[in-house]
Image (cartoon, rainbow, N blue to C red; front, side, top):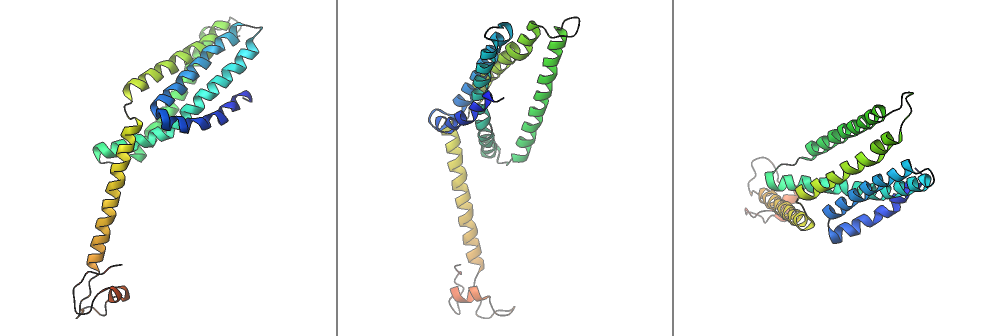
Length: 219
């Protein structure tokens, strides 16, 4: 765990790299680096001489890869929210956040259970773990799963930086147009009646309206 903290400072490079290369590519690179780190653990399990060194190197590699992926995880989630709003006209922050949390918890539970099942299936008669079980549960299977997930994400996820910026510009223009409409409607409602039937007009209306006119007020 002490060695794994190296990924923290390295993750600071994720943001500038994502702006230059793209979130999708950096995210996939982080997953592939994590998969490589998992495969390095095979050396740590099967080689007693260099096992400790290989385990430390594997922890550093996995830490760097996961830190890149986790840092961009929420940014990609925000892009998904904007994309749903752009395509369907619905703000789905709650649904996407809840679905992401549920999928994360389910996948963590399945991953932990599957690893324990592999260790139990390959254990010796006295219950001790074997090299085969440790290699499969802690190295080979996680590496393959992460690598396949990276490939699937790269093929199916189509929102790049240009698409995300386009959606953000459209949403910003829509928000500006909405504010302009609200200002116009509010100012139009602040009209001064020379013979008010419900008392004296508000002070702000009296200041910005010409007397004996129906000129819209400005606030």
